Image (cartoon, rainbow, N blue to C red; front, side, top):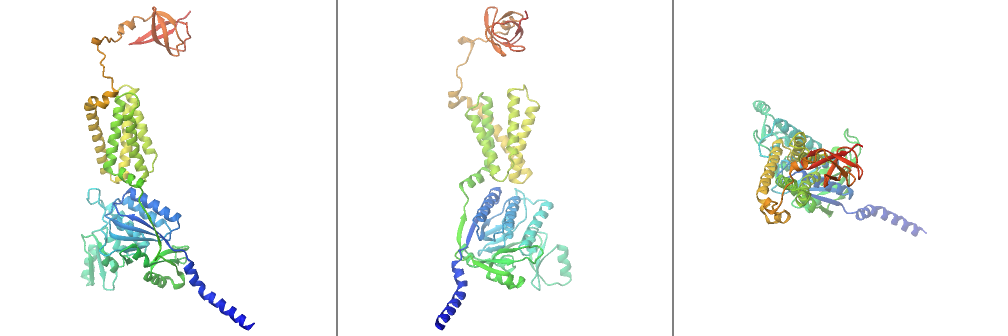
Length: 512
């Protein structure tokens, strides 16, 4: 009996000590999503990042890695991506795989961790316009504030981030190792006071860090040559920050071994709990789909302008040739591609193409219904050009560039329309649809004389068909097409010709 009790005692102890190990082996492997930022940053990239983060969240991924190799791009698109990264609760890691310049540096700074390959660079975030010229102080101030707050949010030195944007600063390292920014006058004062400083970035230069410098300055967290090597260094930990003013719950973070130790020293050991290692994690790469690539292609300024020109040409040819055929269909298709591509590219204002359609309807009304070219035509033209300008402005974030591409589209459309007017009637495909016979008097064709119809004015007759309002009447022993001046006229009712306009004969019922 005693031996059985001892056996049970040892068995329970073995189970107790082995249970943590068993839980580790029973633990599911980590899931990591990899999103590429390996092109110029624009609206298409922000749309791709949004979809990728949503996919990672629905799959309950443990971490998201942004594979960064970009020369920069549009600031507004970068800010959208930064907001998306900051809003997700999944730990994020920026893997600077060669370069993170300008907007790429801002996006990398938004991630909870930054890892760089050897020989990589990060920085040089001075905002410039689409032609490479310096922008106004207002824009520089906005970008400087954005990258500073982004760095502060992730516990990085905000002065280093500012030196990447503003070339009017000195970035220096003090004797105690602190790295701070100084304005020129502040730097001169410190220098006069005999303060020992190492200049890391002088006035007139933009900070651009190599991998070794970024590690030395504490701006990035680790170095790795591949994603697998990166994952081997990281663990997912639960950090209890409920006692901090700006936190109300525990958060998940991806940290290296050194990062875990630093976080435990900052908060205490029992508030930083490792959950799982990212080594041997399942990697899911969120690829750019064919549809995304098509959107990127359509929304480039060059292709957008060309699509608009083709659409305008199709509508021009359709207006010149009565009916609705292939040119009109193709014109609407090209214009639909222009607006549809940009709407998919985060210009999500359905009223923009609606304004274009209303403007086009006013132009058609002016051409076919209202004689001359008046208010309807001018208003329609303004609405069409205004909607196109808005799309280009949203795409380029630059008024001058939006005006440039709008002008290019209008000029190209005009040139194509002139060429179509000159050469299209002579082309073989057009001849198949056009009437080639000329109805000249030599071939026996004669137009109706106006005087012949005016001779019927005041004469009487009878309605051969119901007039509602058009129909046929017999007047002066001739069968004529007529319309009523007033109400419906029944068949066999006596009528009188009240008005003649060219070949149009208007009649009224003859009073008894």
